[in-house]
Image 1 (cartoon, rainbow, N blue to C red):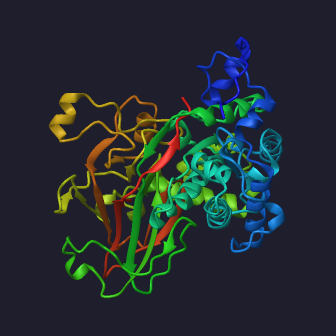
Image 2: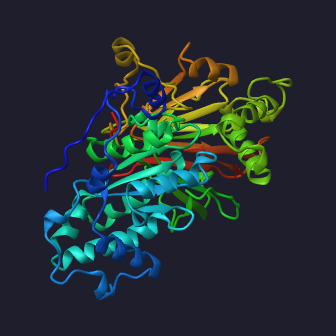
Amino acid sequence: MDAPTEKFVALEADETTSMRGCGLANLTWVGVDKEELRQRLMMPEYIRLAMRDCIKRKDTTAIPDHLLLPGGAVADMAPHAPMVVFINPKSGGRHGPVLKERLQQLMSEEQVFDLTEVKPNEFVRYGLACLEKVAGEGDECAKECRARLRVMVAGGDGTVGWVLGCLGELNKDGTLPIPPVGVIPLGTGNDLSRSFGWGGSFPFAWRIAVKRTLHRASMGPVARLDSWKILVSMPSGEVVNPPYSLKPAAENELDQGLDVGVDAPLVAKSYEGVFYNYLSIGMDAQVAYGFHHLRNTKPYLAQGPISNKPIYSGFSCTHGWFCTPFASDPGLRGLRNILKIHIKKVYCSEWEEIAVPKNVRSVVALNLESYGSGSHPWGNLKPDYLEKRGFVEAHCDDGLIEIFAFKHGWHASFVMTELISAKHIAQAAAVRFELRGGDWKDAFLQMDGEPWKQPMSTDYSTFVEIKKVPFQSLMINGV
């Protein structure tokens, strides 16, 4: 069925300004007709109700007959771009609940999932499986809906990564195609959103912006995104309080190509997870950990991006990220005291040790071009410099991860404002960080904005290994 013709009208100057936050400043038209948008996005009622019922019952084995059409439905009944939206109502300050209501008006109630009620893995396991079951019984409409399905996520980078991870599980079962994902940015940093043209903030004119964003998502080209598996292996008996994106690993799968010698315990406790943006070790993660602890214990102090940022800055100063009054304090020394770095270059099977620069307090392994609310710390490096260092131009789908360092908060500030470059360390296809205690009892790490405190041993090393996931995630490009 041909897509309905969109109706465009001239965009007023003040509306253009309001749309920049949503990555749509280049548009020269105002919203699509609401009913035409619904026709483009909304799946037939019998499919929506069948998926809803399967998710509620957590069972796809017996779909009630009254929810299906006798003999199935023809392909022409499928919308041009069937879409589901996951919304984190806790993101976006006070806009979360009203945005959910607006999305339901533009699509249907059954196609908008509140993440406090329906988890993305439940949608994949029961909702998507229901759609595939109906399609497998000869329903051509359901088959086309499954093939054309697109997903939008209204939330921050952590929420987007959560959904991507659940959809990525389909690769393991060979359940294709994988639905591509777009973003309605509700977080603080929104670097995933920025990297794929959806903007860095939630605009004040959000009612108009949401309608155009959904329309844009129904047509946007699909791009690819590398994802990276992290395996944390620590001495047996250590206790770690991991974020939700780190799960206990069934077994220790550390690459044995690197001889770790006596530093490796005979028995290790392991956690694994996947990240899309970055992993960092050091002072920046320590500041983030303190901030998150405050937000969890006193949520009334941090209710949105405007109030979050000054509180975050306060933690940066009090933890010594910007000011180091006592250089002899072992908690404020450079990471060289506790950290070793080994990498594997592309098409190389051997591990190579890379020196940790002197006096750096934070090391970052970055996948995206955007970091820390839109900065580009790796920089646009000149061809001569790339050749000299053995680097290539960085992209989020090149199978490489960039490793750089910050000396302290002031250095990080100048890098983030792009006045200077970060301390380039390496560009690699795999990375292994080795952390060893001494005067330091704990290290601090964060992965895509989720920080945690990592206990260290004085007898054995803790290893943090990063390897590329063999499949790429699919993103809808918003520009």
